Structure formats: C-alpha cells, structure tokens
Image 1: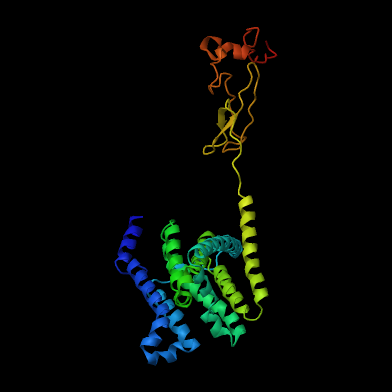
Image 2: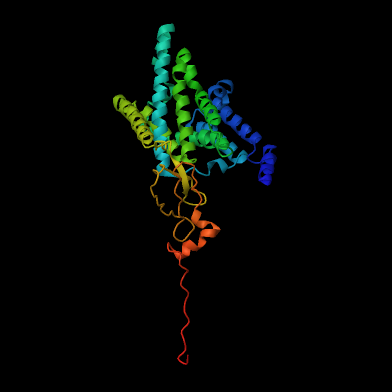
Length: 363
C-alpha cells in the first residue's frame, strides 16, 4: 500500500498519467475544439484545414486523442466494453431520466423568459449551423454522427471523467465538472442563439451527466454511451429528412429510458418489517453470521432449536431463549456435583449396572 501511494505521488510530480499531464491534455483538448471558432478568422491560411472535413476531424478529435494517449495513457479506458448488458440498461436509464429532467429545466427557463424577455425566445428560431452544413448530404452526417459521438465520449467520459473515476469512488464532482466542460465546448450555440443560449446548455449538461453516470454505473463501459450519443446526433440530422419521425424517435428513446429507470426502481429490494419488541437473540448460524431473533417462548414451553448450517458436521445447535428475555437459561440443578449420579442412575437412584465378567467352567 505504501509503495502504491508512493508511486501515485511520484506520478503526480510529472510522470505518465500524472495530474499535471492530465490537465495539460485537457487544456489542449479545449483549445483544439475552440480553435475551429477563431483560428480560421485570425489565420486565413488555416481555413483550408478547418474548411475540410478531414482537417476539422484531425484538429478537433485526433489531436486531443493523441494528447491524452501520450500524456495520460490508456488506464482510464480499460473497461470500455465491460458488461454490455448492464451498460445498455444503465445507459438507457440514465439517458431517459436525465433527459426528462433537462426538459423540465428547459420548460422552467422558458417560463422565466416569457415573464422577463419574451422577445429572446424568438432567437431559438435561428437555423442551427450544424444542420445548415448537413443539409446538402443528410445521410452522410447521420452516419458520421456515430463517429463523432465515439470520439467525444472517448475524450470526455473516457479520459476527462474516467481519469478521476479510476482514482477514487467520489465520482459526483468529476461528473459535474466534465459535464459542464462538455456543454461549454459547444460554443457555436452561444454565438448562434445569443441571449437564448441558456435554454440550450441545460440539455447538453444533463446529457453529459447522464453519460457520466452510466459509465460509472456500468464499470467504465464507453461503447453504449457512444452509441447513444451518436443516435442523439443522428436523430437531429434525420430531422432534415422527416421532422415528425425524428421527433418521435427522440422522445421515444427518452420514454424507453425512463420506463427502464422506473422498472429498475421498482425492483430495488425494500427493507422488511422490524422484529418484535420481545425478540431475543438465540444464537448464530455460523461464526460470521448475524444473530437470529425469535419471539420469546411462553413460560413452561419447551422450545427446541433447530440446527443451523455451519462448519460443524450437523450444524451448530441453537440455544432456546430464557422466559425472562435475558437470553440465558437458569443453571441446571442436575449438573451440581452432588446430583451428578442422578444423570446416570435415573429416578430410582440405583447404582448403574456394571458389566459382569463371564465365569469360567472350572468355577
């Protein structure tokens, strides 16, 4: 244990997988994602790189992946495909429940906007720049959504959140921080919708938090959350082809996840009724088993305890509880030194029979 702690402290001073390297990789990731918003404007020569899909993917996704792989390593990604069945259940459950919460928060903010600044809600009718770029070839972007979703989950839930998940069981603060960062890197929503952007960011935040919770609950699985992320983006691009069907798919997926969450909640075992007040400890089923409580026997009754399974051949017999509830029986007078012969001779007090030796025929 001391050696492991010493290695952790040594690593934090700058070794592979250290906290310093983690923050450097995270800063490079944020800078690479934000660069697509200001570098083409500041450096006209870079427009050729950011203007092509391959160049944009290389800067926004491949560069951060390379930074984390070199500076942090693959330790946070070890459970990326563990427990697929459980991961699917947890992913849909977290996705559905947190999406409902996001809808509630968005509706609450919309009500506040209606009371304070109704004109700002009109900004939401501005076209989404991502959908505008995909209008020429929607099917390509529907398929590419799963690639982008896999990269983003690898970065934000795999490394940025998973780095802390592998170090400690305290996952809430890293989940909140990584979800907030995930929402903030979608800067184009702020530049597009201006004052109405706060109505968009809660959905992004709760989506990221749902994926973080699913990753933690599944033991680190990234495949399911990557598919859910890709499906969410693909449904948005599918709205260019059939908007009513896209809305049905979107809310249908949320409903399925919420129903799974409800079923899981109903299957949680509930604690049983407490034992009666007059119950007394009567014994243990084994060296490490908890004591069993039974109701006090009525005075004069003979309670025979049944043997319990344990390390003994036929189970360890349990001792009946005393009528007074103390858990102890009164001393047996038959066990006193003066009365021991009664245990052998019986009621009459006759001496026990001794084996006779056979007489020889000569005698």
